[in-house]
Length: 210
Ligand code: GRF
Image (cartoon, rainbow, N blue to C red; front, side, top):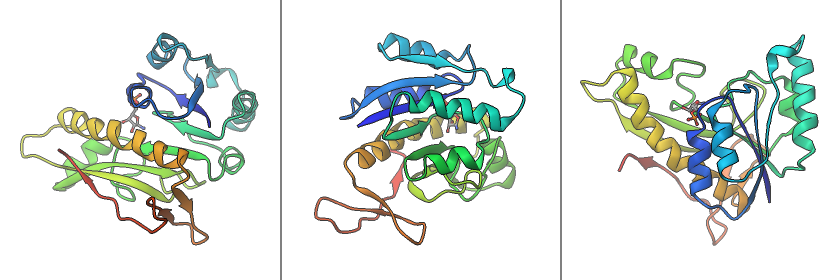
């Protein structure tokens, strides 16, 4: 299985995916920001990298078209968004339907979008977390594959909470990708995700902070 990872920044999720030594080939890491430090993470691991600055394109549609061309050059079976901070066109999403994953730092459908940790603190929620989901045209609303819950502590600020959520991101993203590689995730006709265990029966998944 061939995987292309898209990033925009530091690449800690990329690093966790690499460290998991999954039975697949990460064939390229592509960034919309040429200075993303995650590109160095990929280079250090001997993975091909490319940067395509979205700022050099007149429209989102043109940028996504160019991205598709670059990505498809690597013939991926799976495209993994790992801190890829771009709103995607429907064309892009539909092109990779069923083989496009994202990680989001909240328990979706709560807190789609940005500043999730501060918003969770402002609302006083007691449980926060992260979600890996299939990507659909509605931002941060695709079918959920796996979630991890993190308790919100009395003395948490956005930084401390984000750090603890990130630890869980680094566990659930490699897990979800491993399931995808093993053919264990099925996108059902009703738009939900079935997770099959080795016997082919459905399995419930709920991770909490260790
Ligand atoms: C993560 O919190 C991810 O959930 C969000 O952006 C952040 C990326 O971090 N989409 P990194 O680049 O993987 O370190």
